Image (cartoon, rainbow, N blue to C red; front, side, top):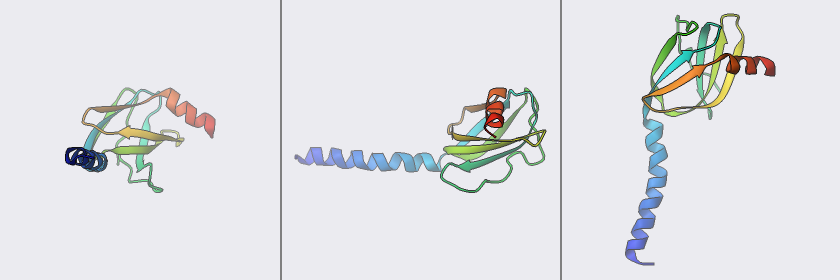
Amino acid sequence: MSTRTKWIAILFALTAFAVPAFAKGKKATIKVINQSKWEIHHLYLSSTSDKQWGPDQLGDETIGNGESFTLTHIDCDDYDIRIVDEDGDECVVEEVNLCGDDTVWKITDKILLKCENQS
């Protein structure tokens, strides 16, 4: 193997490890749009690798039908998302990629009803 080929192999290996590490440290802004017919009263995030939920992202806010809420400074990652609607029904949506400055995530009736049918 030539010296040049060795350097290319080393750079390729370093890039393979550096890209995920860089993405992990990146912060994202996510616009959550409620397209369901229910108000959303709580929204929790947990990295898919974590076992515990983070704090309620909405605090005292709610997301009404047709309204949106913007999450800022979210670590770029794959998340499980726990939604609690106005009736107290909970829905967990697994493995949602929240990464990038222009990410939009829509909560629909289909998403919420699918969770309800699995209960």
